[in-house]
Length: 130
Image 1 (cartoon, rainbow, N blue to C red):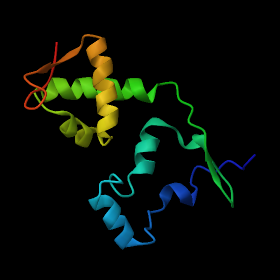
Image 2: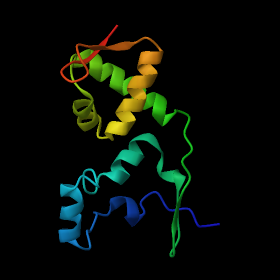
Image 3: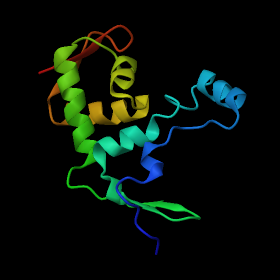
Image 4: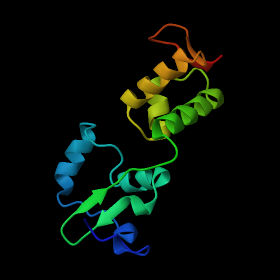
C-alpha cells in the first residue's frame, strides 16, 4: 500500500496547472469539463483529506464517508428548490456545481418521496416543493 500524506502535504496546497490551455478551452466550450480546476475542492467538501493515499508514483482515493453524497446532494437540491421555485434543471445543476444528469436523478428521488413536483409543462415549467 501507499504512504499516507502529511496534513500539510503540498498536494492539497497546490494550484491546478493545465498542460495544454487550448485543448482545455475546447473541452470547456464543448461542455466536456465543468469548472476547470474545481474537482478537488468539491471532493474535499464531502470527503476528508485522509481518503487520499499519495506516494511518489501514484495517488489512490478511498472515498469513505459517514454521509452519503447522494443524500447530501438530494437535500441540497431540495433546499435550493424551496429557495428558488419554478426553476429548471440546468439552473440547479449550475448552482450546485454538478451535472444535469445528477440533478435529474435527485429530482426523480424527490418526486418518488413526494417532496417536489413539476409545475407547468416540461418545456416551460419549473420545480416546486410540495
